[in-house]
Length: 136
Ligand code: HEC
Ligand code: HEC
Ligand code: HEC
Ligand code: HEC
Image 1 (cartoon, rainbow, N blue to C red):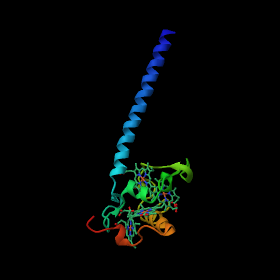
Image 2 (cartoon, rainbow, N blue to C red; image 1 turned 60 degrees about the vertical axis):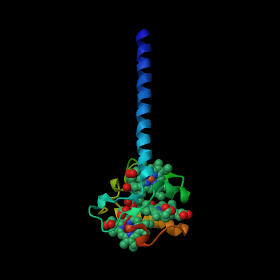
Image 3 (spheres, protein in one colour; image 1 turned 135 degrees about the horizontal axis):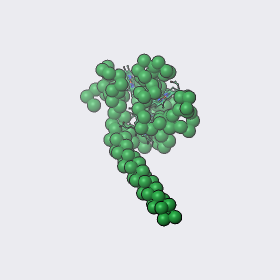
């Protein structure tokens, strides 16, 4: 009986440590997206255009987008786009390759998501130089 009690305490400590580690990770991630002011596009190798401006949190507040899934959509076990699955923290390039071997190529994925919504909303930039701003 005593032994079992010790084991349970150990389990509780282990659980607490896991939660703590997860919280630390969340804090790091939150700072990262909060600090984001543009999309670097490192997956493109040597990009032709200046990185697109995108102040992550400020943009989403102004645009009143509350649901992360609107942009960070996720997939099911078969790799198909799935409603309700999100992928925040996973770069678009992890699923959308530059050449688009498995589906929508990376540049088109960004353009369709960003411009698609701006067109629909009748708000937000749609000219190249408004997103790919020189000297920013
Ligand atoms: C709504 C914002 C937006 C607009 C408008 C836009 N882009 Fe982009 N574009 C992006 C984002 C985001 C990426 C991902 C990488 C980055 O930030 O450069 C990208 C990537 C690219 C890339 C691949 C990376 C590179 O630089 O080689 C090219 C080329 C490009 N855009 C050209 C254009 C051209 C040409 C236009 C106008 C016809 C345009 N874009 C309009 C947001 C935009
Ligand atoms: C309007 C579209 C949009 C919305 C809404 C959005 N994000 Fe993002 N987020 C992006 C894009 C684009 C990137 C850059 C992805 C890349 O580099 O491939 C990004 C990057 C991130 C990153 C990685 C940070 C970094 O610096 O690499 C995290 C974490 C993240 N988002 C979390 C969230 C969370 C949490 C929410 C909801 C509260 C959210 N995002 C809502 C578009 C969005
Ligand atoms: C976990 C994998 C995954 C991530 C991460 C991901 N996507 Fe997708 N996306 C898919 C799949 C699967 C499809 C459906 C097949 C296709 O069109 O490539 C898709 C389709 C799309 C489409 C075309 C269909 C539509 O919704 O209009 C766009 C645009 C798109 N993704 C943009 C993005 C952007 C931008 C990001 C990053 C903010 C992103 N995706 C992150 C897996 C992903
Ligand atoms: C689901 C809708 C939606 C998506 C997706 C979206 N935007 Fe926007 N964006 C908006 C709206 C709405 C505004 C206008 C906000 C306002 O000022 O009222 C806007 C404004 C902007 C602006 C003007 C400055 C600012 O921050 O307000 C930039 C730059 C911009 N978007 C870049 C992007 C880029 C780059 C992407 C893709 C990574 C993107 N947006 C994806 C809805 C969206």
